[in-house]
Length: 338
Image 1 (cartoon, rainbow, N blue to C red):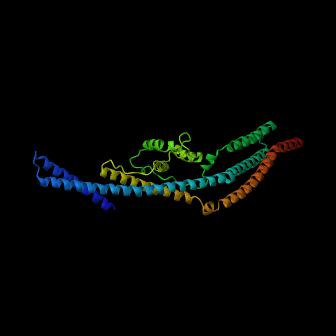
Image 2 (image 1 turned 60 degrees about the horizontal axis):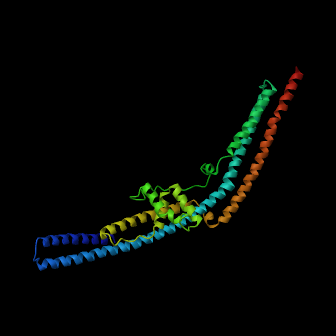
Image 3 (image 1 turned 180 degrees about the vertical axis):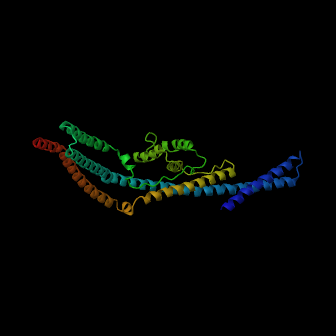
């Protein structure tokens, strides 16, 4: 196909050169132009017209092929949104059932271990007569209990976003580098084009687009996702149509350029979908109810462990507070011995 296109382009160029040459020869005659020149001029003109028509037909065919790629891009974009929505549901389940409770469990374990270690420290100090007075002991105990409450209460205020970025969330595919994907369209130009082509077609004030669709597309704009922005531009700007009024060779160049861009975009978009699907297990894709049930079971196991740790925390708080009595007994014993 490419060889044929190059041949067609070369044919037009040659006819144009011949036409210019014949017109130059005709221009040398002020009058009485020889008949053979007129005949040659007519033949070359007809040949050029046919050659240009072939190029225009080729442009229309390439435009048709490119529009088929556009359909594939739109379909792939829909699949991406489907799997992304699936991924978000899994992330939501994982956050609610595993990450957040797991975080609380981890903090509870840290809190329990902290109180246990502090109990051992204070008891050892009491046994070694390390406190000069009960007031000094009371201050130490109060600081331990207060520090533990404040520190671990603050830890519980961690946002969902911070938890998901903490390395404990489901693995996310690395973003594809698409800086060089869109030829001749800078980021600024891409944003302008997105605002001009896409936003008016999806905004509630200027269209009847469902709110869910608007939110999905607008999120792409807010994140500056160049790959998806370009895909939506191709979607909403409609099919490409060769401009019959422009020079046929320039029109062909433009159609070929668009076709190459559509091909690259389609390839990168499909790659993104494939990588997204890799992050979803077969069970998550085919049995979403099963994964939800499994996560709920895991959540109950975690909550049971949290309850156990909470009881241990209360136990060690009581033990630490009871060290005052331990101190008094040792003090009284020491007084009695004296």
